[in-house]
Image 1 (cartoon, rainbow, N blue to C red):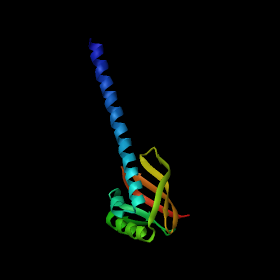
Image 2: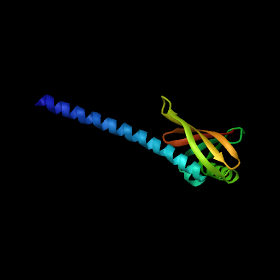
Image 3: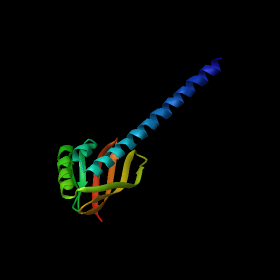
Amino acid sequence: MKNLKQFAVVFFLLVGVVCMSGGQAMAQGGVMDGVKSAMKAGSSKDLSRNFSSVVELTLNGKEATSYSNTQAEFVMKNFFSKNAPVDFTYSHQGSSDKGQQYAIGTYTSKAGSYTVLVRMKDSKIQSMNFIKD
């Protein structure tokens, strides 16, 4: 009987660990889905909800610049106003061994298309690079 109780405790602990790690992966996927929706809509406000406190942006081949999340929201608002969105799709998503998530996608605007690299850590955007195709 004692072995059965020990087995039950270990079993429920393992189930709990699996559920918690699956929930974290789903939350990170949810953030990437939110980024995708914001990009498709050209919504700097929705996009900024996923920004870390400092965000590095590279636009139109210019040098990367670090902005506060509030400044980055205004930079993206300006970008979206000059490059109205038509579509945004991911071509690849992944994560590093150290927990950094990334996605490569294509932002299509009325003015042209861009390859976009999004890097995240702890479900917050650390950097976004827009490279004109």
